[in-house]
Length: 158
Image 1 (tube, rainbow, N blue to C red):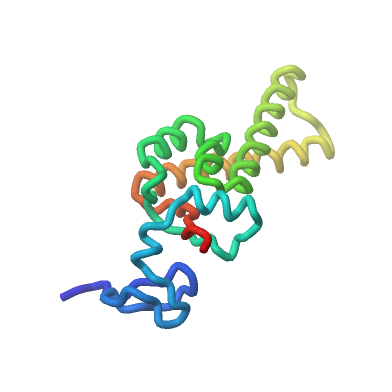
Image 2: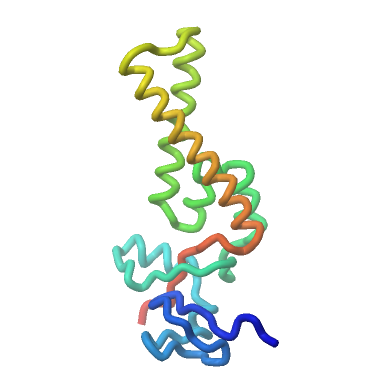
């Protein structure tokens, strides 16, 4: 007995029987999708052609899983793994809040006291957001290791 008889189309999110190679709703060819590359997706994002970009779980042929996993483990809290696969927005988010966390730590160390009043509320909010980014980084490590991290891919432009 097969538990999963359907798969989800990455473009239109409809359920498609596993044996079909083309989505009946949006006509996505799964063979071409499985051969799609991350470098083409980066180019499409750069050229502002985001409608060509789809996200897939697992690494396409031009992304090294080992390199992605090492970047995620050792530099993921800064967002380097997002830059590597072309998810610049998320990378910037991680980088900004990493810098905010470092500045907050230095600020607290230099003053040797906790801020008071409105400054304390801002400090608490920023530290809380920094903690959320650290939790997201840990989830990214798990997702990359388990092939669940979504990587942008795109077919070559015709």
